[in-house]
Length: 271
Length: 282
Image (cartoon, rainbow over all chains, first blue to last red; front, side):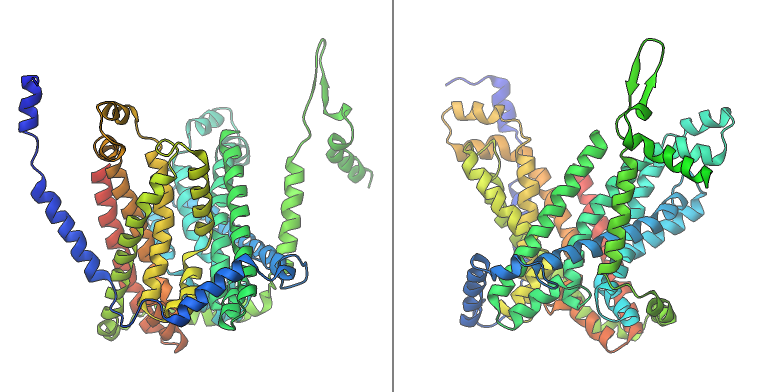
């Protein structure tokens, strides 16, 4: 078979990366063995395997009357409560983040203030939210209210960051045009700033709302919420069918909110 | 009073009569759609009231104990540097957990991602059901997995590793199949037409297109995993979280402040490194 000489030449002089590939592979394998925690005995004990099968049975045949009853502390109520906690938390985050994001935008304030806000945002974002949760539990006692405060606090960081990006992308030409017509500050806000930012802001808040629903569930694990708490308690007390019901509650509420948030955001951005 | 009634009439007339929304000019008329802003505002207020009712808000207690919170915060801001030696072990374990979870999960995700890509697997029944199953698994938060695994594999780092692996598995599979679906399939078909089998064609024609994005996705999930690994210990699954929750329950907030300081530095370091690598990959 005859190859074109140029093709042959470039094939024979192709980059030799064997050593590089080998060393990367070796490095990843070493990293893997370094990272695996030492443990003795089998990964899953016999009782652990038993729990897994029982949990699957619980998922397939959960306590149906907990799923379909509207009584307080049954699954639909817990789902509703989770969404409400996430809603209030997101609202707090949004209300606090709106002024912060204007302060943090380099095109509105001077760079010192903007830098301080950025540092604050990074600090809030790296604080593990269980730490905040436990601190709020110390302040207001365990319960849903501590969850609301925690979610409000932790959302502020991300919402401020996203809002700041929107504000920095804002078209300031419109404001200058309004200036030339003699518009007042309130009028400028009403017709120059709000229409530009409103859809973006709502979309960012909806995105965070989706995350907050998951966080509201997780906060139950440190007793600052109820859905996660009930799930943990059910497994701990060997009530696997109840655990199945709560797991379905979690799956449903996360899916519904994810879908609602995503489709609303799509409508907001694309009209 | 007359003024108030007139105002209410003006506000509500667009909802009541079509005439109030119709603007007539000499030879055309326009009917505005129902103003929905008021409905949305009403709905939001209703949800707000319901939410306040559902979440047992106790502002008296909150403001009464606020000085408590300031005390905790001010103690957090005075980190206890003598605590540093005691936290290096758990801190390293946290990084180990996130590395291990990322590696295991992202390797397991590859076949699943290929099976949920509609351009590789043509049968919609297969990729549809794989995607649905994955989205069910993905809804459960990583900490809930960790809390459940406590009962299954017992307390300790192993539960954390498995939980982080599951999380990485789901998120990498989703992001990776979306990348696979954007590849240019023409080279793949060209190679197949030379007589290569599907695996060979995939290796030569598709893999070079997606390898960079795959590594970028893996690094991204590693960034998330570091944050999760830091709190996974709160439910007993190893890492620095175990120590954090212990120090908080003993009210040693200076120690907590020290842990947070180191955690902050580690997270920033890892994020910077990962973002640098991802920029190089792109």
